[in-house]
Length: 156
Image (cartoon, rainbow, N blue to C red; front, side, top):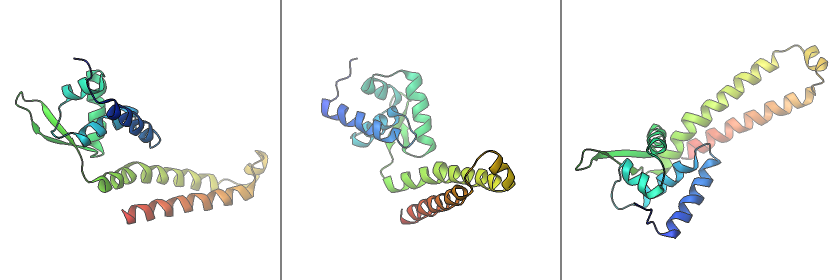
């Protein structure tokens, strides 16, 4: 079955896909989310394959990823026994969950790596021609990033 979506929906789905690529997701994740979010009824993997003209494997992996972050939710079974999916209508909780599960963890890793870097003897920095003032600037930058992320999560 050929994809019979409205061209306006397809264009928007492409743009949403491109936008969330900046957040570390795949373009197809955004396309799936948009179709589920705008849809009147839940869709199964087969429906999504037809709408997006993509493989079963890509849909399966993408659905798993989106379920992990609760971007989409299972909504029971179809008459034929396939799982149905909907977009999570609580966009605020979706964003917060992604920030907590990905960005917060990444910031923790950055902080841990920076802590190890700071423990190095100053002579090592000098031997490798590393600007000591930049180490302090980087520390402020990391702390500002952490505070900004914490503030954003508190607002949401």
